Amino acid sequence: MVNIDEKSVLDSVAKTLFIGGKWRSASNGAVFKVEDPSTRLTIAEVADATAKDASDALDACVSVQNSWANTPPRVRGEILRRAFELIVARSDELALLMTLEMGKPVAESKGEVAYAAEFFRWFSEEAVRINGDYYTAPDGNARVMTLRQPVGPSLLITPWNFPLAMGTRKIGPALAAGCTVIVKPAEQTPLCMAALMSILEEAGLPPGVVNMITSSDPGAVTAPLIGDSRLRKLSFTGSTEVGKLLMSQASGGLLRLSMELGGNAPLLVFADSDLDKAVNGAVFAKMRNMGEACTSANRIFVESSIVEEFSQRLATAMSDLKVGRGTQDGVQVGPLIDQPAIDKVTSLIDDATSKGARVVTGGSKLDMSGYFYSPTVLVGVESTWRIAQEEIFGPIAPIYSFSSEDEAIAMANNTNYGLVAYLFTENLNRALRVTEKLETGMIGLNQGLVSNAAAPFGGVKQSGFGREGGFEGINEYLYIKYIAINHKS
Ligand code: NAD
Image 1 (cartoon, helix red, strand yellow):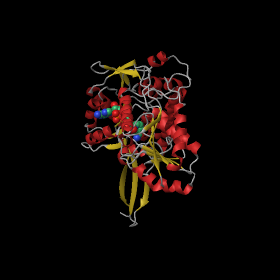
Image 2 (cartoon, protein in one colour):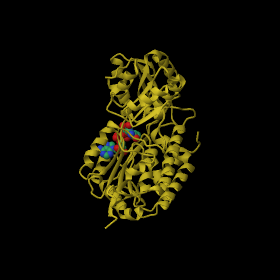
Image 3 (tube, protein in one colour):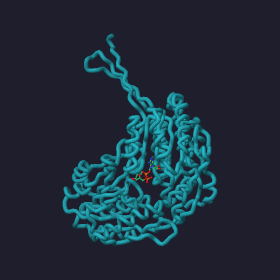
Image 4 (cartoon, protein in one colour):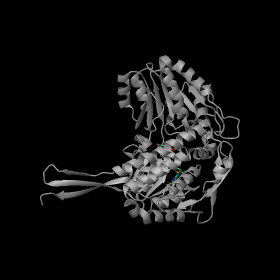
């Protein structure tokens, strides 16, 4: 556990907007409050941007777009590499800051800081590999030449659940590609993004290449930007509902889009699985980030012959988890983000129990000052209920039973979402067969974690489109220019 004074960490972060390389207040002087979800106390007051501030940020992007695009890839990469090193060097302070504004235990925050840093390291290496092509067309005369060029000024909107990594996963590839950006972090967690701006500044990023606006009324600052013809790209991570709204706004300017949206991940446990691995994987896939992850295992499908044993073992593991303020030693589960999150989880549990589901462990809000909810296992749940169809975003593990492989696949695919699925089996043929039939962008095979900066993260169906990380991630910020050449003319 880190031992750094909380106040000094909070004091060290700017609470203002970052526009054109300058830290400044909102043009009307307004601020909004940020609270610690484990105490409900205000920990900071942050500049509340106006539409004018947002427009200033786009002015800044536009003014340096060409010079940044023409900055040698090696130089762009080296700035990202320095930022990676600074994040690693400050990982204790950043982790504490993250825990204070978001609630996750410090050990998990440290994990996110390391994951976030990796995107800068990975894309510092990708910046120098933006290649094109040159080849002969089938007629033998024409030559096809292609270049990949930056799409231009980009708006990056991020959620509160991974306050740093969801930012670096967009900023890294955008800067590597030669795009300038405006980042709009979630109103619950603006402080980590402000700390990241300082790091990029210190790493030598020229003024205006990265800008940050914070707002308590996100639509009021982003809608005018999305409607501005100088903006070329919108990358959004957040709920499917807001993603759809932003897509409709972006249709006016036909913006390039990346949409990383909600999930309703199935986790399949077959009788031929290694049960220790399956229970550990389920706890991890369910409880990472207190269940507040797009990748969280929302629906646990267990083969009927082992459902009793699995449920008991999962309930024991879940009830052993220590819940508390994320800054305390040994805490494994922090608070939920806010009161609406508690209300949502409570209403899903009430709905399921009123229809006959049984609570094996947990099932209630905890009598503590913050937004704490007990790790919960539910059995006897049915696929048509709200808890099966909506994103839970909390520490609830509903268990369903299946009796055949086909039934398990059909139940897993019975959702509008398609981000990730987890599969536990020791049978290689089954693993390959089921993997191919699951309608998701990612699969965790015998493991409860898929996140990796070197891998393409993203979904299908209403979990969105586009990929972040991996070799694919930089393509979201590049377009292909084809040059037609007739060799014989
Ligand atoms: P949210 O959609 O409420 O907010 C996400 C971001 O959009 C925030 O910055 C918010 O301020 C902004 N926003 C909200 N309303 C807006 C509007 N009208 N116009 C412009 N911006 C607006 O989501 P959230 O509660 O912050 O995050 C949780 C959601 O994010 C979950 O659905 C989760 O699954 C999803 N998520 C997806 C991924 C992924 O990679 N697929 C990763 C993390 C989180």
